[in-house]
Length: 121
Image (cartoon, rainbow, N blue to C red; front, side, top):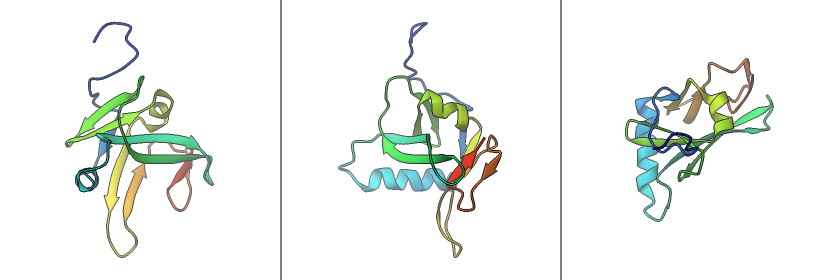
């Protein structure tokens, strides 16, 4: 990688954390559909939701300018703007009687909505 290159292709450490349960579920979902072109998971933030900002979690490939983070065999892609809001986040996965799904634990959030899908800073 050359100096001044805006595309970050080497995985970075420390951008985010992923629980073992979340990594296992993402690996299962990534391999479940052989037709999918994605080789990783995009974690992003967009405007909206009841608290102002909403999380985005989707299968994708690397785009120019992405920050790349690899943990427990899963590649995560974040655009630069989202990386600011997601630095230090923990992605978890819960299954049980009180609902199941991916959960974001964001130390940067000053408030979070009741469903946990949006936040404000």
